[in-house]
View (cartoon, rainbow, N blue to C red):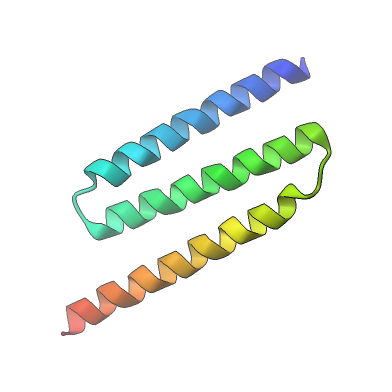
Length: 88
Protein backbone atom coordinates (compact mmCIF):
# COMPACT_ATOMS: atom_id res chain seq x y z
CA UNK A 1 0.00 0.00 0.00
CA UNK A 2 2.82 2.39 0.86
CA UNK A 3 4.46 1.77 -2.51
CA UNK A 4 1.26 2.81 -4.30
CA UNK A 5 1.09 6.02 -2.28
CA UNK A 6 4.72 6.82 -3.08
CA UNK A 7 4.13 6.23 -6.80
CA UNK A 8 1.00 8.40 -6.81
CA UNK A 9 2.80 11.21 -4.98
CA UNK A 10 5.76 10.92 -7.34
CA UNK A 11 3.47 11.12 -10.37
CA UNK A 12 1.75 14.20 -8.96
CA UNK A 13 5.09 15.86 -8.28
CA UNK A 14 6.28 15.02 -11.80
CA UNK A 15 3.11 16.53 -13.28
CA UNK A 16 3.58 19.68 -11.21
CA UNK A 17 7.21 19.96 -12.25
CA UNK A 18 6.29 19.51 -15.91
CA UNK A 19 3.61 22.19 -15.70
CA UNK A 20 6.04 24.57 -13.99
CA UNK A 21 8.71 23.98 -16.62
CA UNK A 22 6.20 24.64 -19.39
CA UNK A 23 5.22 27.93 -17.72
CA UNK A 24 8.88 28.89 -17.33
CA UNK A 25 9.45 28.34 -21.04
CA UNK A 26 6.19 29.91 -22.27
CA UNK A 27 5.61 32.53 -19.58
CA UNK A 28 4.70 35.86 -21.14
CA UNK A 29 6.23 37.94 -18.35
CA UNK A 30 9.10 37.82 -15.91
CA UNK A 31 6.75 37.50 -12.96
CA UNK A 32 5.04 34.46 -14.52
CA UNK A 33 8.41 32.82 -14.95
CA UNK A 34 9.45 33.66 -11.40
CA UNK A 35 6.24 32.26 -9.95
CA UNK A 36 6.72 29.08 -11.98
CA UNK A 37 10.29 28.75 -10.75
CA UNK A 38 9.04 29.11 -7.17
CA UNK A 39 6.54 26.33 -7.84
CA UNK A 40 9.33 24.19 -9.29
CA UNK A 41 11.45 24.77 -6.18
CA UNK A 42 8.51 23.75 -3.97
CA UNK A 43 8.08 20.59 -6.04
CA UNK A 44 11.78 19.81 -5.64
CA UNK A 45 11.57 20.38 -1.89
CA UNK A 46 8.47 18.17 -1.72
CA UNK A 47 10.24 15.41 -3.62
CA UNK A 48 13.16 15.60 -1.20
CA UNK A 49 10.77 15.40 1.74
CA UNK A 50 8.99 12.43 0.16
CA UNK A 51 12.33 10.68 -0.23
CA UNK A 52 13.20 11.47 3.39
CA UNK A 53 9.86 10.04 4.53
CA UNK A 54 10.36 6.84 2.54
CA UNK A 55 13.99 6.20 3.45
CA UNK A 56 14.04 7.70 6.94
CA UNK A 57 17.22 9.59 6.04
CA UNK A 58 17.21 13.09 7.54
CA UNK A 59 20.12 14.47 5.49
CA UNK A 60 17.59 15.66 2.90
CA UNK A 61 16.29 18.28 5.33
CA UNK A 62 19.47 20.28 4.79
CA UNK A 63 18.78 20.32 1.05
CA UNK A 64 15.15 21.30 1.63
CA UNK A 65 16.28 24.30 3.67
CA UNK A 66 18.77 25.20 0.96
CA UNK A 67 16.08 25.03 -1.75
CA UNK A 68 13.76 27.17 0.40
CA UNK A 69 16.48 29.78 0.91
CA UNK A 70 17.27 29.91 -2.81
CA UNK A 71 13.57 30.31 -3.62
CA UNK A 72 13.14 33.10 -1.10
CA UNK A 73 16.22 35.01 -2.21
CA UNK A 74 15.27 34.63 -5.86
CA UNK A 75 11.76 35.94 -5.24
CA UNK A 76 13.02 38.93 -3.29
CA UNK A 77 15.60 39.73 -5.96
CA UNK A 78 13.05 39.62 -8.79
CA UNK A 79 10.54 41.66 -6.79
CA UNK A 80 13.13 44.35 -6.13
CA UNK A 81 14.19 44.36 -9.77
CA UNK A 82 10.62 44.72 -11.01
CA UNK A 83 9.91 47.48 -8.46
CA UNK A 84 13.05 49.38 -9.50
CA UNK A 85 12.14 48.98 -13.17
CA UNK A 86 8.65 50.42 -12.57
CA UNK A 87 10.04 53.41 -10.66
CA UNK A 88 12.62 54.29 -13.27
